Length: 458
Image 1: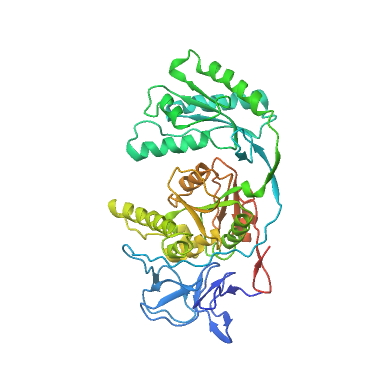
Image 2 (image 1 turned 180 degrees about the vertical axis):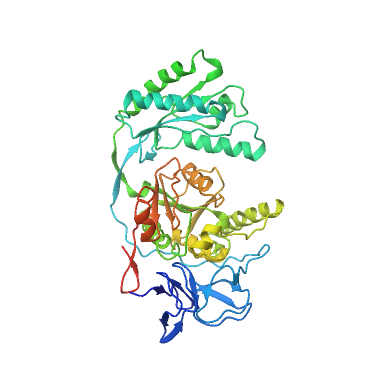
């Protein structure tokens, strides 16, 4: 088994699969390269000498340039290469063929059909505060209902405390309202109790209006300042909601109705080699069946954004994607922050040296499908196929945005590891076997392995 991989024939670096020692030999293309330093797993080794300013190629694309002269066999990392990205860019639409050669199937899943025709993959009772002031109340109610019912007949009873809903202005306030609205309407919730205070900015009556035409039997409201005993009143409502939701049963649903969020966090040098490409294959398969996947983390598209832009089905979608990218860049500039100051310290320790390298690996999660829609933060999915969603790289915010868009589940790849999960099932996919073996409480699956044929396979 080789201890390294050259991902693309055009690459002028290899990635160490296992830690490599000074003096080890790399054989690539009939040539032998001697490793000049100890190199950790997931990191890059130069296959040629680089002069300062010369491009470093990985995934078949430049991931930066040499800060200084780099010798053949050197360890290539953030100390000796630098991003090529700077300033704002102009983009030109050069559409490519995104036809998928994947046969359709009759696959199904067992889900909960809601009264509006939507489908959930869970049947849970959610208690959602309009404002952080009532966090204690919602937690107390959830604890009491779980103790009283043992969750029999439902998948979970969950409170969702947060610190927002008051002392917010403008878009900040509206984004809070949008996400809370999206939670109330999410089909994974069989019933929802919305708990308000009464004097908050996010007024319960106004919030009720932005829900639109909702199921009043399954979404109920309680304003704590307007009742004598919020615990007794809340439990009365919750018992009624439990009686309704606990009667729900799964039915057979076409796979075309599944909506999956694509996320990575705590990434390492294997993310773009193992787990992210696997999600890309799954995403393409799901879309070929008529289903939907959503890619977000806009700053982690920088350096690979043209790949997504040229996969847009129409010029209008291309323009929306340009707007998606430039809006984020303008936000950084307006707040005097560097646009391309990424990856994180953990990413660098795992073998990711520049934003281009991170983005080229990150965007592989969405496969090769055409872009069908572009969503703003808090928007809900209304077009099947691949959607791009405006949200930052922050794991908590981006995963919440995916759930709020209507994703039933988030597939979350990680190489460094993280225990975080959002309010829909969050399936952790490890990029490497060490993490999978060492953190069984964090990781759900390690779906790929290295074979002697030098391919990643199930």
